[in-house]
Amino acid sequence: MPEQVDLFVVGAGSGGVRAARIAANHGARVMIAEEYRVGGTCVIRGCVPKKLMVYASRFAEEFEDAAGFGWSVPAPTFDWPKLIASKDKEIARLETAYIATLERAKVKIVKSRAVLKDAHTVKLLTTGETVRAKHILIATGAWPHHGAQIAGIEHVISSNEAFHLPQLPKRILIQGGGYIAVEFAGIFNGLGSEVTLVYRGEDILRGFDDDLRAHLHKEMERRGIKIVTRQIVEAIEKVEHGLCISLPDHESFTVDQAMFALGRHPNVSGFGLEKIGVRLAKNGGIAVNELSQSSIPHIGAIGDVTNRVNLTPVAIREGHAYADTVFGGKPTSVDHANVPTAVFSEPECGVIGLTEAQAIDLLPKVDIYKTSFRPLKATLSGRDTRVFMKLVVDGSNDRVVGCHIVGEGAGEMIQLLGIAVRMKATKADFDATMAVHPTMAEELVTLREKTASHVRAAAE
Image 1 (cartoon, rainbow, N blue to C red):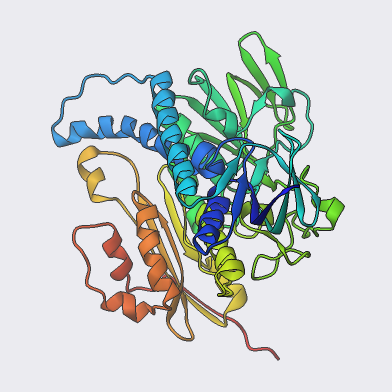
Image 2 (spheres, rainbow, N blue to C red):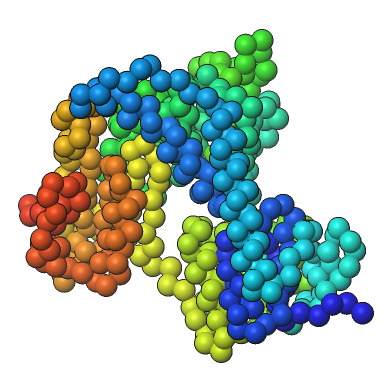
C-alpha cells in the first residue's frame, strides 16, 4: 500500500523547504523530493555562491585603492581553484544545514525525481514507489535556456557551469543583459578576465529605470568591460585558440569561454502536470491564484515555477504563506508589489518600486529627485567612479513610489528603504529624517531640488 502524507513537495529549493517545514510545524505529515541537492538554485548554484564570487572579485579594486590610503600592498595573485574549493565547502555546509532543518521538523526527504501519476499520487522514479498525498506543492524553480539553436551552441555554458569551471578563462563572452549576465560580467572582470557582454536590446537591465541602466553601463565600461548592444551571437566555432564568436554585423572575435545568460524558463516539463490537467499561464509558469493554488485546488505551486516575481525571498514568502493557508487555518496571500531587489553588479544596484517611465504611465503627476556624486572613498583612492541615486515621487500626494541606487552598499540600503516605501513614506518624511554623516545614504534624505516634473495633460 502506498505511503500516505498530508503534503508532498516536489523540489527542495528555498521555497519548497520553507513550505515543508512550516507545514510540518502545523502538524502535517510532509515528504519532500529533490533529484539534485537540497537547497535549490539559490543555495547550490545561484544567489549564495554568486555572492561569494562577487566578494572575491571586489578584492582587486580594494588592493588598488589601498595605496591611496597609505598601504603598500605586494602585487596580489589570484587562485581560481582555491576560490572554487572554498565556495564548494560553504555550499556543502549550507546544504547540510538545510537537511538538518527539515529533519528537525520531521519532514521526510527523498532523493528522487517525482512525477505526478494522478492528482493525488506521486511516483518516485529512483525506486518506483508511489506516495498518496492530500496536497501536492510544485516548487521546481526555473532552468536556464540558451535561446535559438545556433551553430556551435554545444560550446556554450550557463551560470550553472560557470560555478565549476576548472580554470578562470582569460577571455569570456557573456550574452545577455539581465541580473545574471551583468553580475557575472563583474565577477569575471574583477578576477582578471577580459569580458565582452553582448545584448540584443538597447541597453542592459531591461525593465529597470533608464537612468540606472545608463549609469551602470558607463560604470561597467569604466572597469574595462566591453558592452555590445543591439547584437546577438550568430554562431560559435571551436578554433585552435578558443572559440570564434560571430555577430550579425560580421564582427568576430576569439574567446576562451562563452556563457549565455538569456533568462530562465519555469521548470514544468517531465513532472506529469499536463497529463493531470494543471494549467499553465501565458508566461509559461504554472497558473495560480493569490493563494498559490493551481487549476486543481489541492495542487499548489510557488516560486520561479509560477513565473511571478522570480526572487528567492519571494519564493520563501510564498512557501510560508501556502503552508499557513493549507495547514495553519490562516489563508494568506503574498503582496508582490514593492518588492526590493539588488543586482550584485559592480557597482551594485538597489531598486524598489516604480521606474520614472512606469510612474509617468500610472500617475497624473510625477516628481523626480536624483543625484550623482563621487563617493568620499574615491577622493583618496583616485578611483574614477560615481554613485547614482534617484527618488520617484507621486506628485499628487508626495508619496515616494520608487528608489533607484547604483553604488557600494546599494543592496543593503534598498532593504531598509523597502520598509519606508512599503509604509507609504512621503518625500516630506524623507526630508524630515536626520542625515547620518558622512555616508552615501545621507543623500537620500538631503535631496531637495526636483530634477524633473511630469504632469499628465487632462483628458479632453
